[in-house]
Image (cartoon, rainbow, N blue to C red; front, side, top):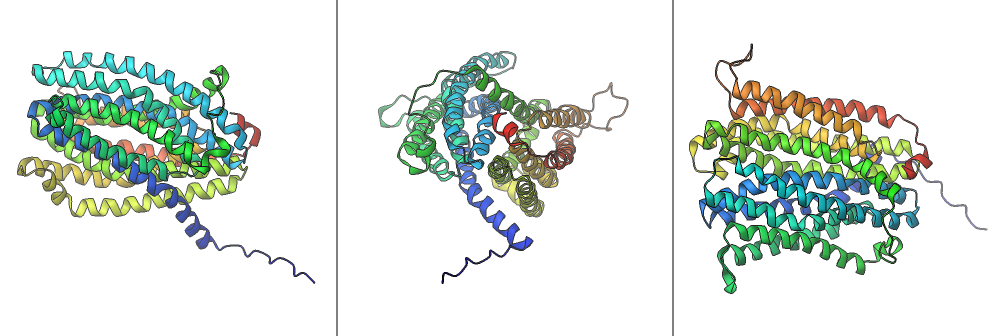
Length: 473
């Protein structure tokens, strides 16, 4: 007599939470390592250009500020592939994935070419700035040279989203680490003229960055072609021309994310320009606080990207309850870790600042800004994790409106009022608070975004899941 199969025992809520955290972290940690490697490339560019000359450092810093706004916006636009593929994976409709990836690559190619044009037009901003000729030349050439890699970057982000949505995040990590090493070697060769190559100074950073962007695309393609995990959804087994409706659908989903990323990145970048009138100490302190905050931000961002995949797969399977549960656990995990980061940042703010610079005046101002950064850690983690969860539901316009409101209606105007204290304001501080005023405003803006997005996620998560609409949106 054959014994009946055992009846599965339902997991307790605490066990389910623990299981979900483990699943989320397995997806997130390779993304985190990859993100840190990308940040490491920017750090390598700045530090190695600084060893060439002060003018090379200034030119690379200015070029990078414009370049990053373009890159971050492009990254947001291309994120539409993540929830789309994740939904099909959750529904086990793997045969639909290749079509989406092929169309997303066409979209990436087109958007990448537009980004090249816009990036080259953006260098006109340097003509309106009072810059040394050498600094101006390095900044302009940095943007012009790196812009050649933008189509490769856009297509790479398509493959990035495709791979992450298949739960394959380790290839992204591996390629990013190799690209970091390649970037350092190319910088050493091109900035300083080693191995018989011309000594290009800061412009060498641009060539290294551009070549690494093409390497990322080629490296990930090489990995995918050899890995069994991609065989059932391999998108390159046939040629497919652009499909107007699918391209429109992907743009409709991705453009609001791009605008969202632009709103946030441009707000942070504008602060450096607005406080420049108060001298180099304020600018340097702002850059220190921003650099360290950006480094810490990689953790909630990586958890958010993993959460988008987890929520999207649950919705593709038609399991609205699982999607709500994964959203709640993901946001809570991100906020909890941010609380630890905030505490450490507040306790060691002076030590962190002194690690960046021996200048006591700059370090003192930066330490105060790092206290403000500690205050918004929880809000920042909450807003990025909730917005990623919402994108898992393929909702992108409402988060865009929330981010524009938080940064451009609350944060920047309040920052100008506190930081600049213009005379025409009926209420203003007795003295301009300079960089500190802008960072106080960032705390307010990020809190507005976090609360609003949490309310939106609660409402979106209560909607009934209509499987055909989800899959063919």
